[in-house]
Amino acid sequence: MRILVTGGTGFIGSHTVRALRAAGHDVRLLVRDEKKAKRLWQADPAVLEDLVVGSLTSAPDTARAIRECDGLVHTAAPVALAASASHARRVARENVLAIRRLVERALDFGIERIVHLSSTTVFDTRGLERANEETPIIEDGDAYAASKVAAERHVRALQEAGAPIAITYPPGVIGPDDPGLSEGVKGVQILLRDGVAITSSGIQTVDVRDLAAVHVALVERKPEPGRFVTPAEYLPWAEFAERLDQAAGIRIRRFDVPGEAIRFAGRVGDQLRRFVGIELDAVVSREASRFATQWVELDASRTTEVLGVRFRPALESLADTVRWLAEHGHVDPSRALRFTHRGRGRR
Image 1 (cartoon, one colour):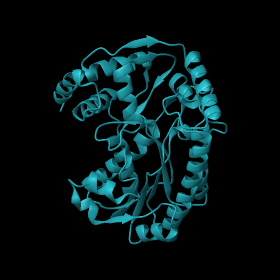
Image 2 (image 1 turned 90 degrees about the vertical axis):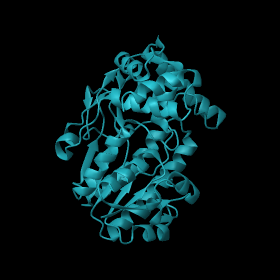
Image 3 (image 1 turned 180 degrees about the horizontal axis):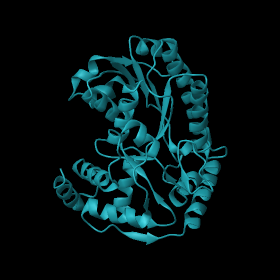
């Protein structure tokens, strides 16, 4: 099959492209930046043989891209947990317009294999002990969550009208081979440098390679319209720190911080953004602080049962992430040798 992939120069999209090609499928990319695509895929020029340069919000561009394709995996969407309200409103408009231009155009062309990448940030997990794909959508999240929810509602409306769309919901995505040091991988880099806050609740991540495998499975199934959460194991922060120790080969710094203190910092961060009126990516947001201190365990049993995909242990994903960060100069050079040596031992 020929599958159109958006976001093919990003972390999730590029791994999805590799997984689709490894499964024997042809891939077409719709990209905004041709130079970036050529830099990323110069070692695999076959990917560049079917490249459409254009905008997700342009009807002619999306029509040109989707023509003669058998499926669509839509992974392109801006991500910024610390987004200001104005930025998030613009993102929301662009995301919804992209769905109208791309997903609805794919339906017009009779495409019956459509996968849309969403996020666990759309779920309202407050007061729950566990969450899954049936968890309600959050109504009063921060600006970033609101931007994701706007697109989510539009895709779900298409689903309910009978469109053959599958939606995936990853938590923080980690793993090797990240073209742009994305949110999850950058988070691992920061934890290696600054240490792990031992606070309330815990964390779930997903390996980008496992998420890509989910996308391939959904395309090949002629996606069962529905929703699929994609987390690996849940780890309290203290256990996560132990896994990171093992992955890095050293003991990572720890510090105890009450969850309420982190959430207070998040509320202050949001007020700073409103007052200053510019992006402050280094400042924690209310929503990000809630995820860090009040994370509710996500249950991926439906995903594993329906698709047969298994999520690798956090230690394996962390080890590969640390190794990749070290080999590409993203950690302190004085410590990188230890990371690199340890990671190579696991290959």
